[in-house]
Image 1 (cartoon, rainbow, N blue to C red):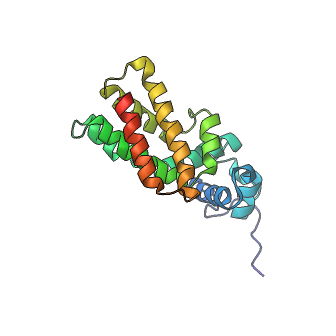
Image 2: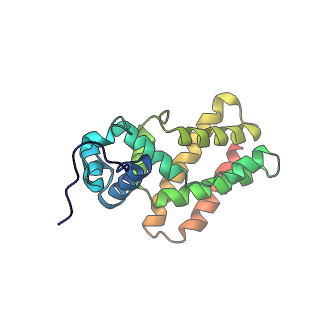
Image 3: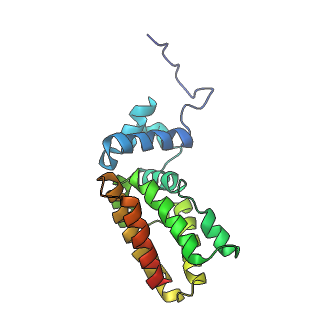
Length: 187
């Protein structure tokens, strides 16, 4: 039997933002996003739900934290290289789109969240979208249409993420062909 913790604050932090994020990602991956609650994260960490509120204001912020953790896995180096003038926008968007698709294929349940929740609370996600819009603009797309172009690309990427999961015939080739075709018409 493990020793009972004494009352009051522990001398070493039991709950951290990193631990909350890791537990939330594990719950989402194993049980789905519908099971991702503050109570579930607290249970996974062995603390009371109230202990989480020092770090996370509620489920909406928890979802933003998970979204940012997943989006941090998307490689944006090509977007930055394009903005530095070392590669062309189509090449940058292809590299970003491929990375985004690969990440989402490991987190397909997040797609519904991405498509329905505002991103303002997920700062890292907002920063990624700002890079994408800047590259789309560099490609010559009018400012008023830049977000629409990003939405078209993202819709394609979301769908292609599922193709990887269902073992579609040569999903990477289909994605590459589709993305090149889209980009040729958009940028």
